[in-house]
Image 1 (spheres, rainbow, N blue to C red):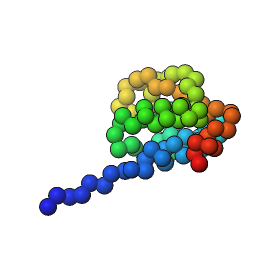
Image 2: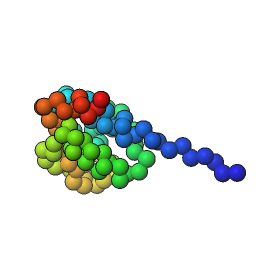
Image 3: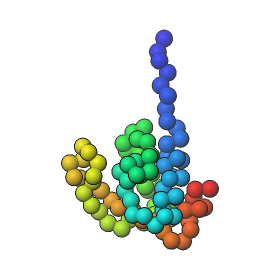
Length: 96
């Protein structure tokens, strides 16, 4: 008998809800900010970060505003995109 693996199927929707809230605040943020300051859990796979931000950008919730060195331990200061919420309220529609 094999052990059942519990897959985190709600991570992306939870993360999009959080991005919508942060977008509304006007705060600039990156993926690490979502985890450290807002308590977002790790995604089931690291590649999910790109798809998450692409979805939020495509939904016109956020826009890229620049880059900085990542503060995430283990990234050795790698480049990280900075995002900001769009002021047009589209985050409300996307989060609904």
